[in-house]
Length: 315
Image (cartoon, rainbow, N blue to C red; front, top):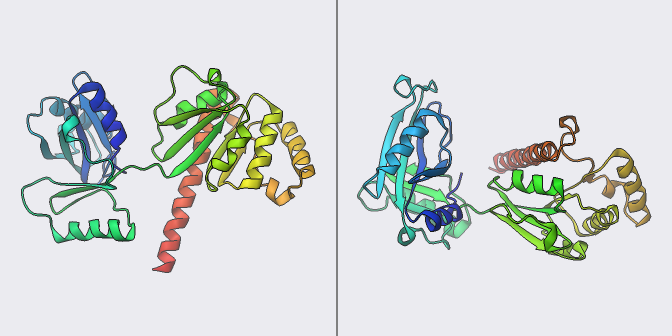
């Protein structure tokens, strides 16, 4: 989990004064992990620290908070009507435009009690600055340390039709995705673009492929089979982490033959995924989007596990 500065900045711009409530420490079982946060203001809130009575009480206290920073510990037992059995320490902080953390910093660190910065915190910050070691969110000797949220995965959605719109809506809230949404003209996009999504009109979308990172993920679902094929051809020549194409088995068979005629090997072509998502969920745009989201999240989890295993082997 990470500190979402952009979400906080947007909330403060809209509501002037916002209280951010973050899970600072967990003992035993709890509904959310350290770093999970919600934003609370008069008349509303966003994000979640797990729901239920804990979240309700934390939001009520946040709206009446009269101090800039407050640390509180809550037993998740009968008193809250929850059966997790553990305890959660929450850090509640009031923000206005004058209090926002520096957006250029990669780590947000602050004291929850008076005192000088402990050596353990200084070492953590030095490792982050000098070695690029991103710290985990944690309450360390009375100091709250959180990495700043930076989307780690580039995702390109090619096409703003019904499925493209459903995908943008479903995928935009996922915190690790930096989404670029492409179609042939601005009129193709809805009036409201989801937060965190960059809409990019381009008459010849395949010309944008060289601007994508070589490990980016791609979802191809334009209005035109010819354009879909051009994008597949361009991506096979450019490189990608994942590329999925919407379509039937018949469409995919034709595309494999055409891509082969364009000079791509069967091994290269096999890196493309078609169909995308979970076909058993059906063909409704939202059902396709849910299946694709599950597919991408599973890929991300596998990549995270492989990274952890590699770290263990090299240690």
